[in-house]
Length: 245
Image 1 (tube, rainbow, N blue to C red):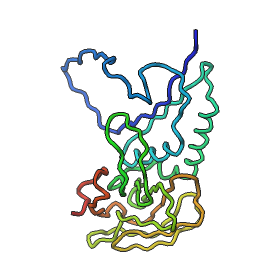
Image 2: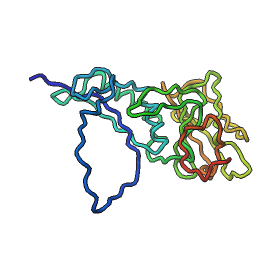
Image 3: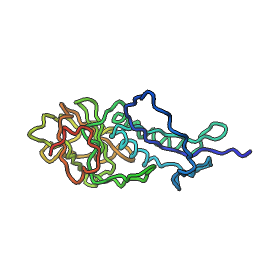
Image 4: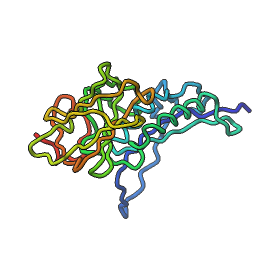
């Protein structure tokens, strides 16, 4: 008998409330053979698979999902004797290095007012895991209470300047930004907070290879009113009452 291995699967599990409904008949059994898995990623059978998701795609996907109050389930295939191969170990090591720098913006966080800003938008459809083309103007947000906001960005700008428009000053806003830091970098960053956004000067050297996070500290950071623009269409509005028209 030939031993086979399962394939690598990344599943998005949205956090939703569950409820039970009494006296409802169970649905009839479904013939799943009529719903083949997506070609090129799954074919509906158990098989050996040597192509794994790259760490860069995983890092980008992880905080994009977390910013929308989602969860990510990572499934690693095992050899018949229960061991990982070298590619999987390398994948986990790369993921661990990234999390060591940026994990503060993932663990113990909650969604912010909006999930993000920027021109990049992912495609729709089932099992659509195609990589999104992020730019230096794309951010994904997480938060810790009213005093910390994390802004993940996926491209390191050539001029080392960022502008986070979602936290622009507004006459209706009571939020105050006191300090801006880059996770993995020692010391605060130089910034300017105006009605066009939060302009930040990055250091000369990135603290990790791919995807970085600003830690924005202050007061009442959930009171900001991100403006609706062409860059925000399609992003998840998590607190509609906060949006400025």
